Length: 467
Image: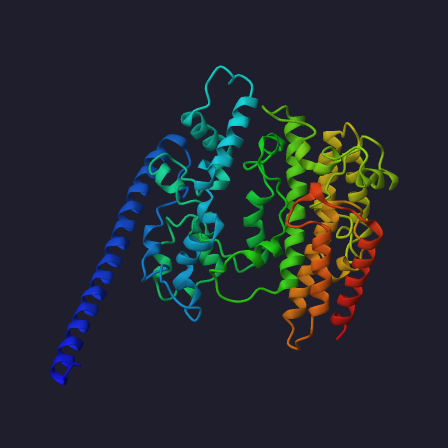
C-alpha cells in the first residue's frame, strides 16, 4: 500500500511523463507540417520546371499527404463523438479500400491479370513478363484510377503508394493546403475554395461526378473489355450503395433518396458519354480504338449455358438471336424512362438501345443519339422505379434489388420510425435468389417465384411509404 507521500510522488511522475509525451507529439506535429510544406515547395519547384517544358503553366500538382496524418490535423484516433474531420485520415488509412488501391496492383491476383494483359497485347510476346513489364503496364493502364498521380515525375513513386488519397477527390492541395488550416476556411464559399483547386463534395452531383470518372470511366480512364478478359472485375457502380458501405470520414447525413436519384442520373449520363467517346474514337480512327466495345454489353449475352433458362427467356422476350443487350446496368428499363421523364427521352433511349443491339451499330449514329439522350436526361425517381417490374436478366434484377435497399434506407430516415422487419426479410430472400454478392453465373432463375417476391416487396414498400 502507498502512503500519501509515495502516492504524491507517483502522481507527479506520471504527470511529468504525460507532459513529456504531449510535448513530443506537439513537436512531431510541427515537424510533420514543416516537412509537408518543404515537400510542397519541392513539388512546386519541380512543377514550375515541368511547366517550362510542357506548357501547362500554373497547373496544380498533387503533393505528399504526410501532414494529414498528424494527430493535430486529420490523424486523431478518436471516438465516434469526435468531429469527423479530426479522424478522417485514420478512417481512410485503416478502413477505406481506396487507401489500398495502389498496393492492390501488386498482389497475386492483379499480377496475374497484368500478365494475361501483357501476353495478349501484340508485339510483346518476345519479352518476358517481369517486374519492369508489370510496372510499365501499371503506369500505362492502371495508375490513373488506382492512385493519386503526380503530373510530373518527382515523387511519383512515393505519391503513388498513397493509393487514392484525399486529393483524388478533393483536388490537388498544392494551393489550398495552407488555406484550409485557417479558422475561416469553413466560411469560404465553394467558389472561393474552387479557385484554389479544392473540390467541394457536399454537393451530391459533384460528388458523383468525381466517383464515376473511375467507377464508370471516361476518355482518360477507360476500363475496357481487354482488362475484363484478363480478369479485372466488371464495373457495375451504384453510387447510393457505395456511399452506404464506404466508411464515413465526413460529417452530416446524406438523404438516401437524393443519393439514389442523383447517383442514377450522373452514372447514366457518364455511361452515355463514355459510349459516345468510344464511338467518336472509332469514327476519328484514333489508335487502339475498338468498335463496338464489348464492355458496353451485358456479360451474360455471351457467357452463358446455351440451354439455360435465362437464355431461353431472354430470346422469348423478343430479342433476336445474336443480339447483345446494351445498357443493362447503367440504363435499365425500370429506371429510364420513369414517370418523370419526357417522351423525347423515351424515344431517344429506344433508338439508342435498338441501334446498339444491332450486330454492327453505326458509330456516327450512336454519337448523335447519345447527344440526344444527354440533352433530355433528368434525375431518376426512386419511388417510380420501384413500382416497375424489372426485365428478366441478372443486371436488371440486381439493380432493382439495390433500388429496394435504397427505399429501406429512405424509410428508415423518416422522422416516424416504422417496423421494416418484414420488408427486410423479403429483400434478403430476393438477394438469396440472386445469389448475391455478385455471382451472376450461379443464379437459379425461378421466374414465377421471383416475380411473386418482387410484387410482395413492391406492396410492402408502397404500404410503408404511404404512412
